[in-house]
Image 1: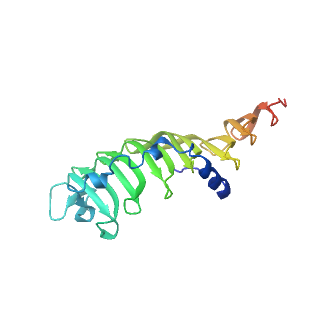
Image 2: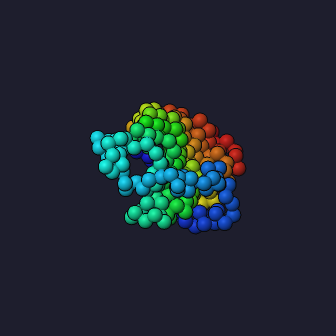
Image 3: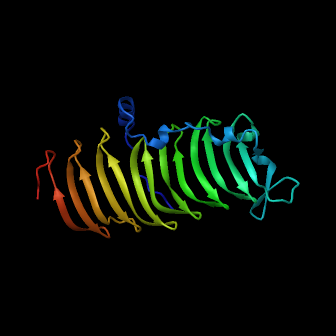
Length: 231
């Protein structure tokens, strides 16, 4: 499936807003490394990922005919001082929590969970600057439910997914002061569908329009910057 991303926010507005506030940061971002990451928890019990081999989609340790069960750490370029990922296997298939890292374990790149080789439960991903960039849920290996993308603390898109198939999605853009500018609703065919909204730079609703397959059904509301109705 494909995730849709809105136009980038200006660098100037990002720098200004970061200096002023961190309200846009999610609770998940604030909790980065509040608990020990897996590569630290597994330090005394994990095998080196490079010591595992795969046969017919099942992982084994080298020179073993028993499907591997246990923890692993994947080191970048086989450098034991540079953990890149940590997780676990059960009967040769990914099972349990899995984490990826930036900068040799300095920060999270992604966190997820597996059950019997399939993605299951919450997924989170961060960019290299430490900002949460995407989160959602997996069910039996397929993206499902509500998935959300972020750009530097601001919601940039939301997708509604059923068993890996995108049903509809929203795209958000912002003014330079980080106030919401547009909230557009699309169907799976990438046509405007449902209620879309625009906002003035002061946060006042500017318009609310109902669409069907890319066509205007009705202009529901319109306001000037001071909140006076225009229709």
